Structures are given as C-alpha cells and as structure tokens.
Image 1: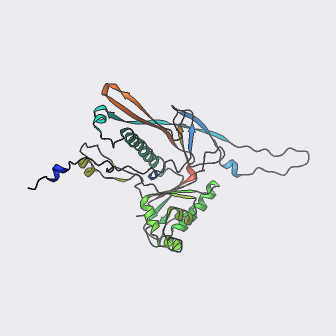
Image 2 (image 1 turned 180 degrees about the vertical axis):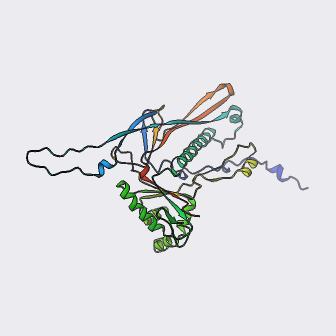
Image 3 (image 1 turned 30 degrees about the horizontal axis):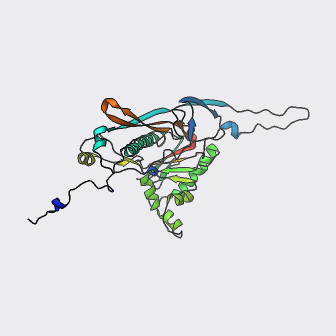
Length: 332
C-alpha cells in the first residue's frame, strides 16, 4: 500500500459551509396572508357585528310638509375571541455547546427550529378552521359534464370551464354579501391543474413568458390575489435514528385536499366592513410582536442547559360564514 495514505493526509470532519437541513421557506405558509391580523391587548374580549340586512334595505319615505322624516336604525350583536397561547422550546446542553464546531450557531438554529414549529402548527390550525365545509356556500366538483347548480365539472377535465365557474360564483357572492370576493386559496394540486388547463394556457400564451403564475390566475379569474400554500408536514412518532425516521415518514402538503376557498377579506381590520375571518393576536402578552410571537432565552441550571423558548398567541376566528365559498373536489 502506498504511503502516506489518503486517511493520513485528511481526516473527515463536518464541512463548515454545507449541511442538509430541510428548513421550510417562510413564504410556504399562508395562514397570516389570507385574513387580516387583529392585534389585541387582552387575551379575550368581544367585538361588534352589524346586521347585514340593515345595510341593504331602504326605509326612505316621502316627507309631507310639517312632518318628521322616516327613522331608520341598524341592529348590533357581539361575538368573542380567545387567543390561545402555544409554546415550544429547544434546550442547548452545555456539553453539546462545548463540543460544537465554530460553524454552528446553536441559538440561531434553535430559534429557527422552534419558530418553524409554531408556524407549522398555525398553518395546520388554519386548514382545520377555514379550509373545510364551514361556509354558507359550497360547490362540489364532479367528473361528468352535467353538474347541478351546486356542482361543477372538475378542473382537470379539458371540458371544464374554471374561468366561467369562478365568474358565476363571484356574481352569486356579490348578490349574497354585497361584496366581491378578493382572495382565492388553491391547494397545490389544484393550482397545478389550472396551470395546465387549456383555457388558461390559451389566454396567456401571448404574454411575456407564457407561464401561468398566481398573479395571472388571479387576473383571469377576477380576484385580487391567489395564494398557493406549499408547507408540508409529516405525521407519526419521532424516531431517534435519522435515517429510520425519514424512511418511515410520509410527508404531504398541509393543504393536501384538492380543494379551494374563495373569500372576501379587507386589507386591514375594519369596524364597518365584513371579513370572512380574522386572526386575533394577543400582542399585549409580554410584549409579543404583531404576529403574536415572542422568543426568549433563559438558563436551566438543573439540566445544565440554555433554553430557547418561543410562544405564539392567536385565535383564528370565522367572522362571516357567508363571506366564504368552499370548493370541494376541484380536481379528481
């Protein structure tokens, strides 16, 4: 064997500029992008709800000489929110810290890790709360070409007409609420089908790049913005062996259903406008930020570790059930 050998000249050590960490992109999450955030100073409280019909009728009458004008009023009711506190931590053991190479920034890595855990939890809660059959209006996709009034031909079919479908829903939405829906949430699989739909491809083939993007879909379907959530999650118990855990994992999109949500939401909270939903964030809790998030570090001497802890407060509240249309089975 030649001397010196490769192992004599080089000892394998972890590279300081390369690692394999599947850290999600913050843009993959949409839970804070659909409905406005409402920062609140108290964990729970009430908010006003105006009667919808009062603003869509007129009690105006002719006024005879010497008589009072006709009177009018509106009804008010209240609803409540309760911003739960969610928390997670990651401990940095003294022995681990002392043995760590210089390329590791343990505090920054721990902060990213636990913050992502909270964002993923909030995304999953958003799906359970809103991306479901909880709205006044629902349309269901079918494989055939003879849908009823509450059905439509699924958009993966070449004979379907998604542009006309959404156009009809917008008109019905306007008649029901007095507002035009302005946000469309599409599951990733639904967006893929629309990007390849012949009607949409034909409409944009003469644009600069000829690529169907979220902005182009929004323009074609007549809504202000289209959001496509891309966050993924795994289920099942944690396994200490990395390879075994990854082999057993079955990742899927958090928005895994082949569904969509068409809704109205103002750009910011308003006293005199409806919204399909609000996210109440308790920023009055220990100086939390507008996201209702705070991160702190403190010593855990009894386990010889530094603890990085993050908390997030929120209540995802459906405010106006008629300001949302749930689209079930948009594709097969």
